[in-house]
Every structure is written in C-alpha cells, then in structure tokens.
Image 1 (tube, helix red, strand yellow):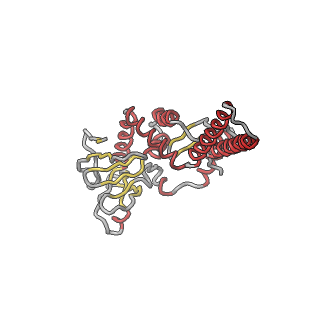
Image 2 (cartoon, rainbow, N blue to C red; image 1 turned 30 degrees about the vertical axis):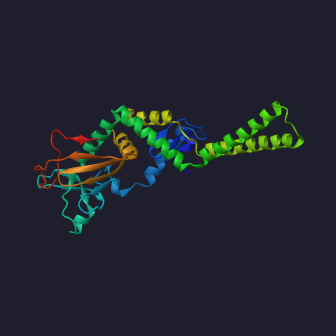
Image 3 (cartoon, rainbow, N blue to C red; image 1 turned 90 degrees about the vertical axis):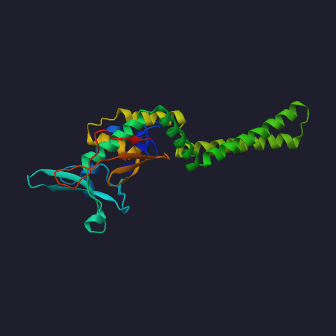
Length: 276
C-alpha cells in the first residue's frame, strides 16, 4: 500500500506509467517522503555493493547456463577497483562464463533502448501491443460494453416497433426492464473502469515517450529506463541478447573480447551493432 502510485493519480500498465491519469488522494510530496523512508529502511543488498549500484540486477542471465548474473567488485594489484557482473554458477565452478564489465554491458543496454525510442514506428507498435495486452488482462470491460450494446439494440428495436404502432402493455414493461438493465450495466462498467481504467493507444504512446525525458546522467534515470523496457538479457562470450518488454524480436549486442586490467572481462567493440 505504501508504494501504490495510484494514490498520487498514476496509472501503471506493465512497465508503462501514466501520471495524473486518475484523481490523487495523496499529495506527491508526502508520497515521495514515504518512498525515501522505505528505501532507507530496506535496501536490496545485491544492488548496493561497493558503494555502487548494479542496475541490471535480476535482468542479466548467463548465456551458457541460464543462471542469473550478480554484481561483484574486486581490487587489482595496482589498487584499482573493478566492477562487473558474474554468473552465480561460476563461483561454484559449474560454469566457465567469464565476468562482464559493469559499465560496458550497462551502457550497451542503455544505448540499445535509446535507439529503440528513436524509432517512432517501433513505439507505435509497442503501444498497440500494450493496448491489446491491456484488453486481454481486463476482459471484463469489453465484455460489459458488449452487453450494453446488445441491450441498446433491443431497446432500439422496441422503440421502432412503438413508432410503427406496435405498442402493448408487455412491450412497455419490457422496455422499462431493458432500460433498467442498461443502467445497471453502465454502473458495473464504471466500477470496472475505476478499478482498473483502460488507456487509449495514444495515452500509452504518450507514456512511452516520457521515457525520453529521463535524466540518464543519474542512476535513478537509468534504473527507470531499464525497469521500464528490459525483460531479460542473456550474455555470451562475444555478444548479448536483449529482450524488451512486449516485443517479439530479440536485440543482439555484438561484442569483441579484449584484454582488460583483470584479464578476463568482455568489452564491446568501438562500433557496437544493435540489431532491431
């Protein structure tokens, strides 16, 4: 409850957030103060190692064995600190996957998402898929709307019959019953819409475009972008496969293995190819 953003008027479908989509019952300043306290009181240890945040935590997987890759850090002989992601099975000597540099994989993924956001056609397609997924998730609204339409057709037929002189006590009673049925159906529809309002495709597109305004010079901005778009990333020796939310195609980030200070990390080539 303390983290439910509906209280400040924000509607969320999947990872797409639309601000001011409904009446707020808590002011944003109070809500943000509560969030700050929650973060302070309970910090995820896997995201706060060596005074640095690993923004791909829970999203990054080993391409060799499928295990999750967690953030690690180490100090070289020169005293320099290194940050990377490491397959959990490699610690148990059950996988030979080499670690991948933290800044390398994170920047590559961020750049891939930015490239995706620059393609208006892909955003339109994503918004359409989100809209369709929204309808499937809340099947009650279209079902109730169909019932209302059917009831309205019956009302219209009775009115046409009355205009042609076919009026009886039973038809008048039936008309009243149908009008009452429609009224109850409309109330039920309104209740469902309030419970989980459906967004138009245009509103969803607007929400996606808002990600372009994130400040990617901050960890918070990068984290929101990752959480909003990334479903999973599988890392292999020479490339990574990126899967975005609500998209069908995988995105391939090509890598070139080079020497590094720790001798076993993977870094991208200067011209990283992102296949969309």
